[in-house]
Length: 481
Image (cartoon, rainbow, N blue to C red; front, side, top):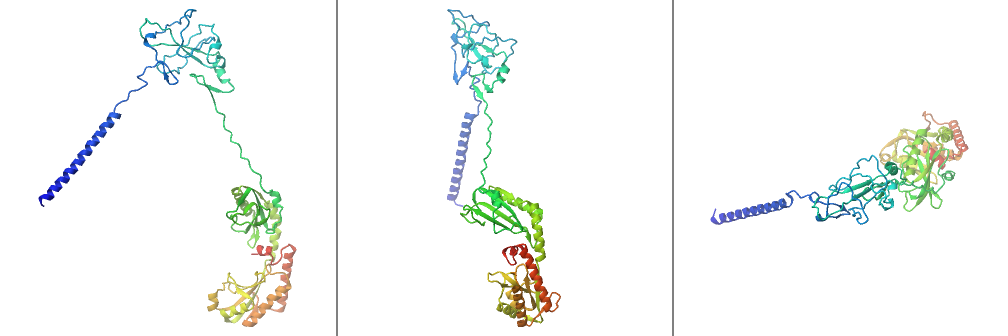
């Protein structure tokens, strides 16, 4: 290591030591400065300052040469020697005080405690006093003594007169205004009256609930739908369709501002003033019980509260009394006629699909082949024998032993022609695919069996028409979905 490098290192060490020393000096100076400012006990400005009177933030000091110790007995004023003015406003009361007790002092700390004395000057009028004695106020006065020039400078001893009413407690409590009085400045302090919160004013609903319940709405049937009506207090949009039931189907129909009804949907800008909500209580799951209807009512009530509306619910026992007979009829007519087409040998799925589509069937999303009406509703169905689904991949690679054709009594329109059409399709498929027509017991169909089935179908559909349910109609599709 050469000398130059040693010199540089030594120089850097000196610089580092100098920086540390400078920082220590600055820190000691700062600590000394802080100790000088805050390290000693401050003088109490009020304790060491002798004052005779403090009023409205002003200090009033008397000249020592003019102060004389007050005599024990008050001097009698004469015509040529009137009484000297007091430090504070003098108050004289003509009311005598008997059996007086000391009053706690509320004066400043350096003022002597007041003395209770009887009034020695009954000739002074009560009107000359400040503070009303007849209203039960405490009248405080600080009387000053006469000062002379030839007596030494001594501390002041003030005489304080306190005049009390005959019954101060009754006067204080009996005040109708219940005012609190400060004994120093006689300023009445009124207690604030309790704040009464006004009750919120509820607006009237936009649509009368009873008028709404009498509306004829084609979406609902009073025998099958348990109804709930909601009327709003102000128009609102429907931001989301509420979920009111998990098991049963329900519909919400809204009344717009022009008085028209439509299926309620969350459409921006469409304002609703009322809603009619129906729970379909009759379905292939059975009739909804009282507990399920009550739960639906609670859900609708929550929806009405959220929308700031009122609710009207249908009476549950009255509704069940009407719905039970209809549910029994639906259970009796809910029948499906099945005709099975079977083969002694397997048939290819491609051939089966081609034959069905040639006769008007088409593969549906639920894995069945459906024969549709002009309006697009499925009239007849073709399904697998084991209940599995038809798929394009399976039809392209899998052979089948046969299939079944289904005739749903409740969903096929009424008439002999529809049953005859169904049988003609079955016969044509049987001839094209070399299949045999059998019943559920794998017995070959006979002409007598077909007549009996035709009569049974027509009787069940006629029973539906008697209660106002058209086979294949809108209500039938809802009840037997």
